[in-house]
Each structure stands twice: as structure tokens, then as C-alpha cells.
Image (cartoon, rainbow, N blue to C red; front, side):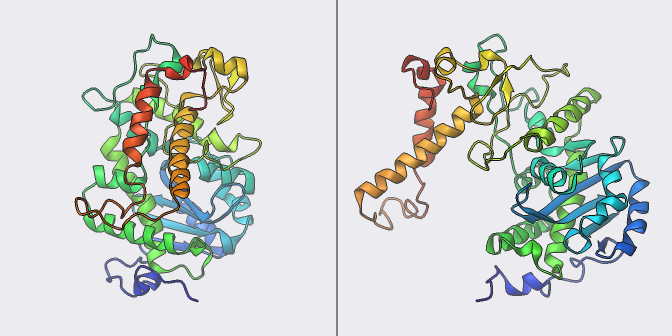
Length: 375
């Protein structure tokens, strides 16, 4: 059976207006090796690019099929599925590894993992705007308040910060409603067909999606960028972010890799470019941290988890406990309650409230009292 898209005409691009369709002047599809030198020649004259990768299960174990590079007035979509690995040997690797050419990206971790392990490309010069957005929220007067620096690391639960997706950042900081609408259409399409990035030819909607995911990075960067100190810290943070997954000898693709929290010790503190000495490995994310990141009980039992991994485990346990309760009840709740029509429209309706109840206990450090570090 053919995949049912959110709008079948959108999937082929037939429902896009002429102004929405990609043109040769604004977007170049590079699918023949003969076209690569000219594309790279245009790209190389710019010292600030926007880069994004797409594929199926993006990462070292998946398949990178499309790589998009944008300059301020044009987007180049390299069809890696058609071009093959040789496209990186013919100059694309040099551009991506050039430290003097900065690349705007958004959550570069899986892109960097895929590029390195599949194509031996060590992308450098990254400015990750997901990190820049966190830095923007940290500014004085914003709602994100950090814990006191003098407290023991393992108790600084406020240091666990959420990260936002690109769509949410577009909605928060950019005002082009039509672009946001097209971004949502693309995401709906991807939800319907996980293998869509292997479909050829690429539809106009997918081409537009590639263009949005790169050209809008320029707009977001202009909105969020700050002083030289912030830019210097962003460069360091982005390099560490790119190395988060690609430096792992083995990927688990489990809950400690796939979550919406910023890993610890990625962004240097304001006025600093360094991090504390790290010698002890977290058994969740397998990253090294200072020893005081972990409680004495954790270290004694060899079950040390950093604060991010503890929060991830807590959230997973709460969800699993709720699901187990539902299975034990062996009944299906009524679809609606008269007092709240939408109560059961989302099966996780009460999830966040329950999670915050657990989180309040966690924040007071009761895990040490109960000698239970698997919260």
C-alpha cells in the first residue's frame, strides 16, 4: 500500500505555489559528479556556511543520503545517495574539515557521527545554534537560573537544561509564518515515511525542507549572536558537541543518548574557555566528569550516573511505572471524562505532573538518604 502523506499533493510538490517551489537560482541539486567542482567553487568563496545532513536513522549505523550546504543567497543539495562516497574525496571533505570556514548547524551530533564513521569526514569549524539558543536563555533576566557554583556538583540539579528543536526555535525567534508552516509540512511528511530520504527523485517539498533547514540558520544566527566572548565559547562548545557521539567507540542508541537535555560540561562558563578535570566515567552516557559529580553511594556501588543521566532515568522509570500500572489494571479507561474532554486524548496526560512530583523529591537529594541512585 502506498504511503499516505499528510497531503498527497504536497508530497510531490504539486500543491506548492510557484513562489514556494525551489528554483535553479536559489537551489542547486548536485547529483552528478561533473557538477561538484562548480558547486564547491561557489561555496569556497564564503567563510560562513550553513550545513545540514538528512538520511535514514542518521548516525554511524544509519544512512546519510542528503547533505545540504547553504550560502547566503543559494543552497546546494548534494545527493549523497546518487553521488556516493567519492563526492567527499573530490573536495567536499576539504570544505567540511576546513577550520577557517565556519558552519552554522543545529544539533550537529548525529551529523558529525555519520560523517566521521561512514565517510571519514571530521567536520570542523561548527557553530551549533542549538547551543547558542541555550546561551541566549542563560542571559541575565531570562527564566533559566543556574545553581550556585559553590555547591557540590552532584546536587546542582538546576544545571540540567532542556534543549529545543529547530522548529521551536523558529517559532520563538523568527517571525516568518509561511516558512514555519512549510517546515511543519516537511516534518509531517517525515513522520509518515521514515525512509523518505531514500526516495528519488527528491520532491519539491523535500527540497524546500532542505533549504529551510539551512538558510533559516542564517536568520536565527543573526537573531541570537552576541559578543566575542560568547562566540569564542560557542566555538569550543560546538566542537565538544560534535564529538559527543562520534568519539564513542560503541553507540547504544538508548535513553542516555536520545533525550532532550543538554549534556553536562559542553558550554564553558561565562568568561572561561576550560572545564574542570574529569576522571570518572558516567555509566549512562559514558562521558568523563569530575569525581564530585557523583555521590559516595554511586561510587561505592559502581553505578555512578551524571545528573543528566539520573534525570533521564527518572523520567523513563516514571513512564514505565505508569505503563505497568495500566497493564495491571487490565482495563481501558473511558475515552472522555465529563469534566475534561481531553483527559484521555493523550495517554500521558498526567505524566508531567507525576514526573514533577518525583523531581521535587530528587531535587532535595533524597537519593542519598535512601541510598538509591537509580532515580
